[in-house]
Image (cartoon, rainbow, N blue to C red):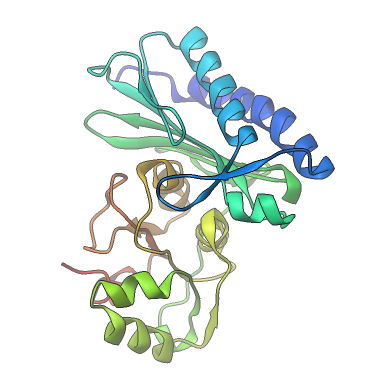
Length: 260
């Protein structure tokens, strides 16, 4: 892979600066309108304008890279080795209601290797997380590491979107997992996965129905922190439809839950 990921990380920081300058003032002033997309999820004009601004920066700084965003889809060379995958506001429902748990997700994906860089900027929480392949994981510049909790009986679990798992025929597994752990909460969206990377919790289970833009940025951060993020089939897959995150020691135990 002939690329300087340290330089790409600088671009990710710059992209986050651009995003924060758009999203945070509108969040604070409540100056936006809300509409409903075809998939029955909320979207604001801030989602769309933020993605447009970020993609313009990528097109200028990395014209040979492809681009993929939640709101505007794909652009650039479809055969490119690298693709920037962006969710302008992950947690739009929180953004709309005034809850500060939302973030811009920025991922860089290699055609063969998958996600190699991930960046999460949550300006209303004054927090940024990032991870680079073989370069470690960080929160606000501080190295982070997932926990060493080794048994489900001592584990702290965050789970959201249980209804989607029930609809997929996985009710028994969900119930069993919740009964097997010490503590259950529902932190939601990107944050629960970052909490696993920080070692604050040990397992995070997301809803079924995610898009690649919800997942790509998270994988390098979690993995470089010593954790593991898989889809509901137990595979590391940035194009999967959900995300199940664990620390390192619990990966095998949770694999019986995240399975084909």
